[in-house]
Length: 332
Ligand code: PEP
Ligand code: MN
Image (cartoon, rainbow, N blue to C red; front, top):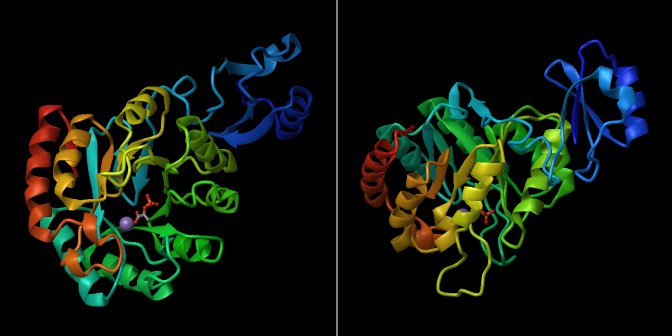
């Protein structure tokens, strides 16, 4: 249940009511809001006169639910808008990792050429093996910041763990929390204390409910700027790296007020399938796509098999514009 208290209710009183009804109290949009688990279905009659609006929920997805907030949130990334009623499908593209100044500059030039505003690249990589490239770390973030200044791009980069969360918050325009870090409550809670947009990826072994509840940690902490990203879940199938859960995307679109980005690259794991999958995702009318692109995928230090080369990506963006236009959306 979500109880929006009247603007006349002060903090002390809000906390008193919260204690009594076992609710979590946050300050939101100029007033106090009390949040309980979904098992609470009724507000005690003695508090009715202090409540502006009461929303009873079926699931434990409170601030992220459409039942509470009908409209999709608009996330403003320094003027680049995702979600809301923008009808934008944002392309977020770039290499899996920053590898060198030359490589990331070629990537930035491609974004500029294609009119793409948000470039992705990891500097702190959560790799499956400790013996492989772990990312350039802070030096990589500094190269990304240099590209932001030189080419006027917005940068998204992932936080791997508590040791780099502060650097990512400082350097990135969007904080990416990866599939493996989705459950890290230290990261989630820290990201709730900034206003920087967060792109939260779904863990590959988590249910939609668990995923949305992780988003709640960021929202409840005070950061309303959360974007969800479906990037494939583990199924019995082994021919593809993961299985992109488009049913889940449709469910989130219907039930959550957070913008949704789909990541076909990590889902299929092979470049040959990325263009078809991207067009399918775009046709669903989601808020954006996250696509890995590398100047020379064969020598990429991470996720080499799934990155498109620049010509493949040029061709894909052309076709995505037509798909988006067919459903009344615009690629940004
Ligand atoms: C990535 O975006 O490069 C990445 C590591 O993604 P995920 O967390 O989805 O595996
Ligand atoms: Mn990757």
